[in-house]
Image (cartoon, rainbow, N blue to C red):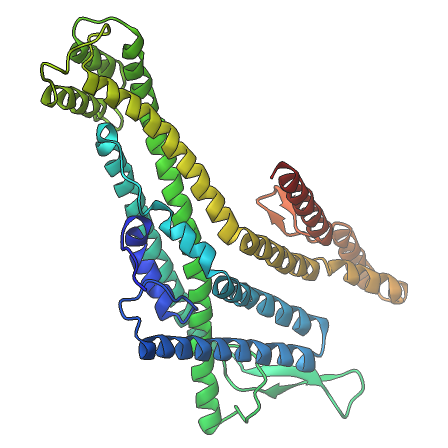
Length: 426
């Protein structure tokens, strides 16, 4: 099975190669489709799948069995939900690759109109440059995050708080393996070969899960960058196109002068006047094809020039329809993943905010104790704390919204409402 390395596939080729190397289930865009090569790729993808989901299950087991208080449980839940992004995206992409193939192949057979080749090439180069910049930035951040996560493991004490079996309502700290993540293993990971295997497994797991999540986010962002630049291309050529199309209904003496006059009315973009290229292309197109049979009509345009202007109008309409179709394909291949991403992120922020709002429990504890039997100094400090606790600690998003369980419920309700509206609108 072959493929055509053109259009969006060619632009995103480095991204596609990195996705293939990361172990995601992608069966297209290879040079070798022999039976052995296909089998080896499937084995590699399945090994990657087993490793990342096994390690994820080990983290969940540790969180469930070893969390001795609410703080440890909250930390474990946040860590688990953070990596849930990668788990969901891995499964979502692996089971829905056909929608990604359709989106990537959407621009394989598109070509610019001769009148707007320069504008199309310029905006295509701009989108390609932004895609490459995103790829470089995301790759550097992924590597830096993995190295930083590993480095901070060797700072501070590696202990875990557990209940003291000899003293009621007391806790003690026990040493735990110095690993990047708290995780349960079916072998002894505290020292020796077991520790080396666990450390190497966690290092690989952190890097590969971050890579999966970031590569798919990067692919989605690149899709959007391409769509935005195409819309900018259509926006730029609209005014020259309207002015050129007006010549079809007017009688002029010299069409080349009209085209140059229309071009002169437009302001240069970024200090460069690109509209002249449209004029040159259309006048040259008409001049090259002029013969005795190609006479000028009532509007003093040759038939070739009329055909070119009419085809330019059709090109603008068809290209806009193509962009709309392309955006709908992006929504189809990534819409559900965005929904899961938003929900998981909201839950993480809500848990963090809930941990921050625990200051109210300090006030409750102060009122519950016999603070009035203490010294005057103690009474003063207790009253100060109670006054400070009247205003709960709140995590806000740039002071625009407060992260809370109510926000989560509101966002979830809004998502359901928007979804139902979209279903009705089809």
